[in-house]
Image 1 (cartoon, rainbow over the protein chains, first blue to last red):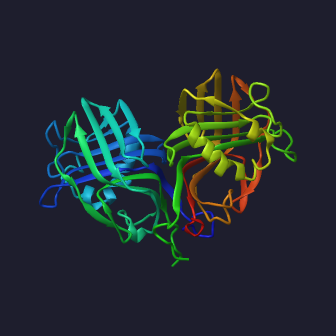
Image 2: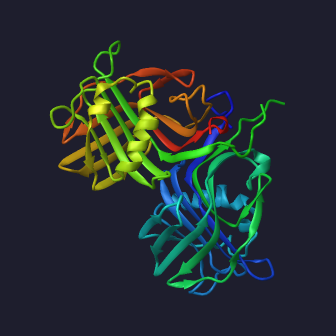
Image 3: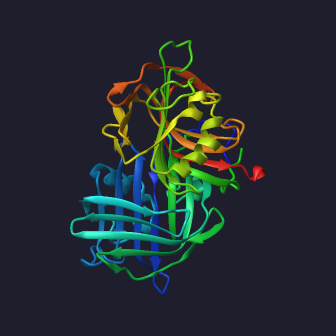
Length: 209
Length: 208
């Protein structure tokens, strides 16, 4: 619940939407991973970015399951890669991270209804059409997380979580392998397919010694 | 005070909700009010809208006066107008809100450019082109508002505000009269022109 002081202490790092799909194989390892960003404000402007690890265990991945970032704001993709994604262990530790190419996106489109049955984001560019599909959507939850509860370990974060029980990452018409798994966020068991709307990452002020 | 990580309330809607309130006399009433909505999530689906009250105290609609709403989701906006806008202090008792004409919106285009210098939202439809323009915006300000502190006095709210020093409401090529002024909001003096991103409204659990 909101604190009684209306202005949250700290500096906004970025704000926007940040849905994702993390698929796992039968052994529990990630088989395909995608994060999508629709950023309303950042120090390098607005924009949309798709991060796709079609083959998380390899540096590049084959044409049908590449590791790539597609974006309409190259500076934003670089900012998110270095300042945000690079602080998330599951992405930073992947072989693809260091050499991940940033390519232009020609079109980005959302469809569906996050409070109904199905929601999608479709990103096209560089000969790729990547469709992220979330289904089995649960009611939205408003979260307020402290630095010890977020992947970066350094932000206060506000977001609106819509968990999905089913999801697909479709590249040029072919669904990447893997299943939605489970995870725990702030003591709440949820899934590895999620919509996040109205998400704000705030760098807390430095506490005096 | 310790945070509660998962708000036990009901999420009502979420999206973007910037506004421009203009006065010709800094000590007088508002002469023009405008709110824009880009709703990402609501029980009535997604959509866009803009409310313009160019004659806030006149119980009359478009085209006689510039009181109108443009939207691509009427049902959603009827719900938001009734539950939120009518409760906001700036809009309470404004005859133009009840009399505004409802128009269909065919397209919405934002031009973010450099967010610090100029940002605009343009809506077209029903023979109307509406442009809302914000200039000279400040840094983003994260806000979290309790029911007691909120504009509606009925909801909790999270958002990111950027104040603008200048702004215009342009209807079919003509700017509505008035300038940006200041008001007391969130316990501080703030501009009456603002961008509001990542805004979520929640009905507190105790009121469900």
